[in-house]
Amino acid sequence: MTWSLRFAVMLLVALFLGACAAPSSLPTDEQRQEALGKVPCLVVLPVRPQLGDDAAADFNRAAELERGAAYMDTVLAAQLAGHSHVRVLSERQITSLIPEQGVLSGDLVDRVAGELKCNAVLVTSLERFSPRIGGDYGVDQPASVTFTMKLYDVRQGAVLWSAMFAETQQSLLSNLMSLKTATRRGLKWITAEEMAEQGIIDKIRECPYL
Image (cartoon, one colour):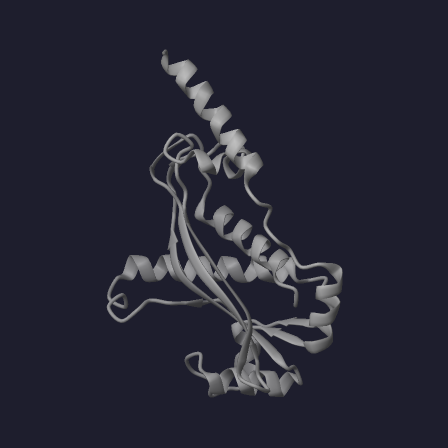
């Protein structure tokens, strides 16, 4: 069997498996209405880079996370611009509300929500934001992004909703199950910014409160 024929067979298998895969469940209109009734006002805090205990000395990784967090802030603001019940805050706005605020804490979450008279706060933490090294059709290092999102009920201290996004892009040949995603991306290697943006869009679609 020639390489081109093997590749064609692999594509057909991937298409078949993708067609058989169960569709991802998204909240219905009724579920969204019920969720919005419980959360009439929601605060979105700036994305927080998570360096870890031993990563503070790693200047390059810290810079990557800071850059990634800043980019994700712009994506969140753009994606949630039409949501009247959502208040997206910048670092400057938080400082003006609470001048002495420091690192993210439960007290800060409560105080920000209290100042804005909102009953829920969305916290996004960025653990990995590794850039693509290479071009659209060939890379030495693929993009890799990991972040978590948690929506807190400030009245009860409970987590209303949470989600995690973690991906390191793989080639189609190394992961046939990625065919659907690869086709959506134009069968090319994407940047960390593009990966993070698509991850945010997907998670917002899954959240009934947004």
